[in-house]
Structure formats: C-alpha cells, structure tokens
Amino acid sequence: MFEAIKPAPPDAILGITEAFRRDPNPQKINLSVGVYKDETGATPILPSVQEAKRRLLETERDAGYLPIDGDPRFNRLASELVLTDRSSILAEQRAATMQTPGGTGALRVAADLLHRVLPDATVWVTTPTWPNHPKVFQAAGLRVEQLRYFDAAQNRLDFAGLLEDLESVPAGDVVCLHGCCHNPTGADPSPEQWERIARVLQDRAVFPLLDFAYQGFGRGLDEDAQGVRTVLEHVPEAFLAVSFSKNFGLYRERTGALIAVAEQPEHAANVLSQLKACARANYSNPPYHGAAVVKTILDDERLREQWLADLTQMRERIRSMRTLFVKTMSALRPDRDFSFIEQQNGMFSFSGLTPEQVDRLRDEFSVYVVRNGRINVGGMTPQNMQRLCEAIAAVL
Image 1: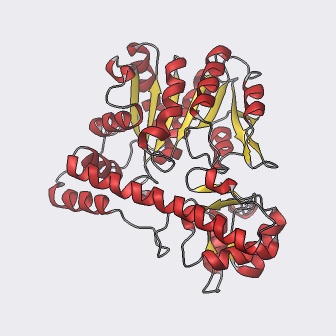
Image 2: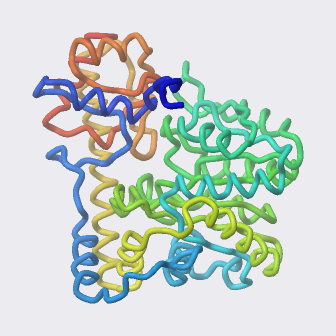
C-alpha cells in the first residue's frame, strides 16, 4: 500500500518554514507562519506563563485524564474572557463550552457536529481566509464556498461586497467569520459594520461560526470581542472557536475552546453531549497543561494583571512595527503608499505583493512570505526592518 502513496504537497504556510530552515543564509527572515516574535526574533515565554508553570510544577499531583470536555473551571474562565463575566448568555446557562486542542481542534469538532446535523449545508468563508479553514471543513465532509471580503486594489475591507454576498447565503447554511485581526488581511469591520453584519445573519437565518484566535492582539481584550458580542446579541445560536496560542503565547500547548451558544439551556446541554461524542471519536480528551496555565493565570488577580501587561506589550510592539515598516518603505519607495498597513489589526498584513514578487524575495533575498502576499508583522524586528524593506523595494 505504501508503495502506491505519492508525497503530499507541502502545507501552504508550514511548508515555507521547512524551506526557511534549509536556507543557509544567516540573514534570512521568516514572515510566513503566524507566530509572534520579540525584538530579538525569539518567540518568548510570557513572564505570567513562566510563573504559572512554576506553580503548576510545584503543586501538580494528578496525571489522570481530563474529562472529554476538559477542565470545567478553565471552560468557565474561557467563556467569561470572550463573553464577560456579566454575560446574560452565561447567566442563563445558554452557553456550553468544551476545552479543545487549540483553535483548530475547536473548528474541527464544530465541523464534525455541523456535518452530522446539517449534512447538506455549505460553509461560507471569506476571500481570502486562513488557508486551513477550507481544509478543516472539507475534511469533516462539508462543502465550502466563498464570500467577498477584501478589496485588494484599495487594500481595505470590501464591506459592500461582503454584505451583498451575505444577503444571498441560503438559510440554514454556515458562515465562518473572523472575530478580530482577520487572517490574512488584518482588515476588520468597524463596530457599526459588525452591527449590520449581525442583522443580516439574523435576517438570513444562517448559522455563524466565529473563529476567535487573536483576542487582545488588535485593540484590546474587550475591543476585539465587540464584533463577536454584537453578533450574539442578534442570533439565537452560534459556535465560537477560541484559541489561546497567541494571546498567552501557548503555541506548543495546543490550548483552545469551543463555545456553543444556544437559545435554551437544555439545547446547550444537548449540543455539548454531541460535541463530546465528536471529540471522543477524534482525540478522546484534551491535553492538560496549557489549559492549566490559562486557568492559573485567569484565576489569580496578580497573575492576570501581569498577563494583561504581557499582552499589551506584544500588541504595542506589533503596532510599532507597522509604523516603522510604513516609515521605512516611505523613505525607500515614496511612490508607493503603504499607509494602509497602519490601519490593519493583529499579526498579519495583506501586503499587495504578487506571487512572483514573493518568489523573488525568497530566491534573491531569503525573505519568506506566504505566496498570497500575507506578511506576519509579528515577525518584524527593528534589526531586520531595513533589510526587509530594501528587499521589498527591490522586487516592487
């Protein structure tokens, strides 16, 4: 059997990192994979996370399995972080939350249940979207179609096109939207635009699946959750796929959560039982350590304040790199306007580079970017900025 198997094509993003590792150039720059780096180019362990891990090392005594839906206290804290501890949804017990292996695990469990309950439904994703979205949904047996989202000519959200496409989505289909810090464009709806989106979702009777992977990386914890909360004020049911990879720096720990919001408490309980059945047939139960770190931090006032400071530092560093990039490119290529990059949110920017220009960056300058032009701003540093911008200026 194995003799007949052909090699799979490399992953669109992780495959770039493999090529980057093979590159012998000591000045190589990797702006492909979505991992935050500090000013030295390292992916740091946050001080709050280090302290939480120290406490766990001293106090952990049990090595048994977690329940299928994970740690109950973690699930509650994760829900409160997204919805606030004053949420009427939580007070009315209309949310069922389960711990998952990262945000990707949350998406897959959600997709598995959607396929069971809505086998003929189509999942609508933005154009562009995170390249793994279609793969996860299709692997679960769901059809995938596209919504207009980004105006590449104007380097901004194509809000009119998005609304027009949303208004034609059939009732009963699924719409996957990014809660904040859109990946790969960095272009997010305004609060007013989220309000209009929420009303269309309500009117069309479609099911929202909100991918919320970057809370705190855009404008702030509450500011980044405003779109998600607005949608939940209008629709009776939704899934939220939450990741803690970025805002806690837990990339290796695979820590996430899936929140199912229902119209009635008994519906939420029924949904959770089915989600647990999906998880049992997939990964059985979630890993412990990353969720224990998050729980330890959120449950301790001093650690929580330290984490908020850590998160603010990461967010502000990314903002400063956007500003420095625009300033440096303006000096090198005053004929090109890159000011739109300062208006985008989160780790990513849709740079406008063509696939051919991206290939030249790799081959001539050892600068690695996703071929659609997405740049990980979180990988820029003051040390590599001049060389990066000179390489981009050369290929424009």
